[in-house]
Image (cartoon, rainbow, N blue to C red):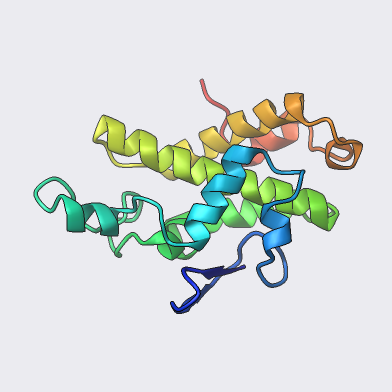
Amino acid sequence: MVIRCNSNDHVHEGSGLSRSAFNWNQVFSNDLPPKIQELLWRAAHNNLPTKQRLSFILPDKFTDLCDLCQEYTENTAHMFEECRSLSNFWSDLEYICTDMKQRQYRYFKAIAYQAIWFAHIAARESEQLITVQKVSQTYYVLLEHYRKRTTSPTLRSGWPEKNILAIYFTPPF
């Protein structure tokens, strides 16, 4: 995916939402729930309260280091794409999505972005470090949430079973 921060800003490249270049029609399709559409829009415009932004606004309360790896500045590209701590998470997701059609793959990938975002927010609210296990648990819960609410037969067909998902993404206790 190519995340364009603003029309005049530089371009971040990563493994993102689609297997090809970023496409606004993928974000604002009827497939994705509005909350995920908003998250992706804000991420593409570099308009999320990342640690980099929070440390600029509240330097006494926040550092700019990533909540997950504690090594690099947490900007939008790092949080969703570049953080090495998430490499196994992304590999597991790619494996689960291997035989999916492009449309369903984008749906699962967008839910992953939401899981990463929710895990970061929860860590900030509790003032604790985030873990990959928490991201994984959040993703598992969101997949089950969307499984129940997804009405499109194209998106529902071939949805991995709970026991398969539980192998790759830690179910909550």
